[in-house]
Every structure is written in C-alpha cells, then in structure tokens.
Length: 272
Image (cartoon, rainbow, N blue to C red; front, side, top):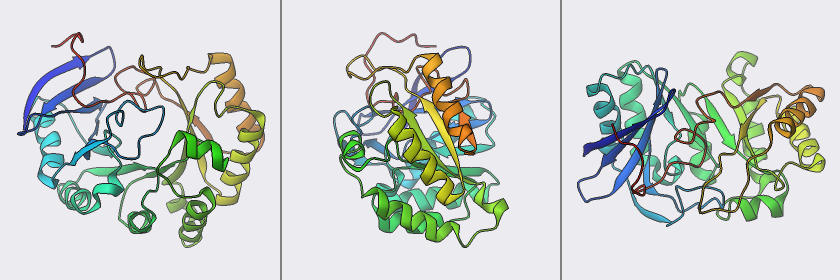
C-alpha cells in the first residue's frame, strides 16, 4: 500500500491510500484520531452512504488496516486514537479487524468502533472486546424505515436485546463507553414519532445518543437537516432526559462526515 495523496480542509485531513491491487481507500485524521477503513467498499449498502455505492470489492487484510496507521504516522500525524469508522462494516471483516485491534492496543492506542451490528454473532463478540468506545449505528428505530436505509441489517429488537443484555452486566462507568449513533436525515428519520421512539430506546438502555448531521452527497437524493431542525431534534431528546451529543466540527466536514468516504474518489479534489 502507498499514499496517493492528502485532501485537507481547515480541520480534517483525508488520506487516499492505494492498495497493491489498484484500489484507493480513504482514512481520515482529525485532532489525534485516525478513522481507518476495514473494507474496500461495503455490502451493507446504507442508502445514504457513498462508501457502499458499488457494493463490496473485498476485505482489507489486518496488515492493510495497520498500514493506514503506519502511513499516517510516517506523514507526521499525531495519533493516539483509532476509530473503525472509515469505509466498510468492521463486523463483516471481523477476524482481520480483531488482529488489527490487538496490534493497536498492544502499542498503547485507544480503539473505538462504529457498527450497524451486522452480523449479530460478531456484534456479540465485539461487545466483549477491551475497546475504548462502541457506537451502534441505528439511524432509524422504525423497522421498515431502517430496512430502507440499511438494507442488510437485523431487526431492531434483536439488536437492542443483545445490546441490552450486555449493558446490564456493566458498571455505570463502563456503560458510558457505549452509545447509539443516529444520522439525522431531513424528511427521512426526523419525525416526532421517530425521535420519541429513539428516546425510549436510549432510556431503556440507559445510554446516550450521538446525533449526527447528514452531509449531502451529490449522487444521492438525501438532504441535510437545517440547523434549526437539527437543534430542535437535539432539544427534544434532551427533554426526555437522554444524554445527547451533536456532531463535532470534525464530523460536519465534507471529508469527515458519516457516509462521505468512498472508494476511488472521483478526480477534481484538491490534492496536497
């Protein structure tokens, strides 16, 4: 693998890395965190996500996952945290992800995961890893709506039951490492009904919600929620007693937001 180039704005740096068989994947660095990819493409194929537009090409090897860190480190980036939040569903490449996870932990890095919980047998295993944070990406809590947004997924109740059973075994301190990820998409999953149901699930699990703001992708029909509606959704969850965090400034960038990473990005970006 080799570095093809770096795209940067004021906050994030996106590293385009070429695999030995000619694919280009993306990793994102912000502050001291590196978001790494686990696959070339993605078979979960979330409707709103650029990463899975062409499906799955192949899994990355454990060394290819580690190489993303080594390449970024060689470029002088300070890295104390690894987030499996790049291209791909880490559970669909779990053996290689676990090997990379073990390596990152062995050199003193903190490691967190973002996952749709699919497939569930590996979700159960992931919950028991000595990770430093895990976000279950729901994006809808209504069964049919979630199926339309995330075609390859388990039923919500099945996921929540597994999550709940694990959380019951944890101390309140450990429970803070877990959250629900919810990407707010204008006119899709932002109704009062959905937000009420989301609040009920968060309270049932006694964990917080990471309320993410959607970044528009040119080839997809979904729209960004206006600021006032985003704040309204935040306040609604808070009014139900749900610990809620908004997208930080790094995750609202075009090259750092949920669903914006892609394989073989089209030409025209400003390369450094």
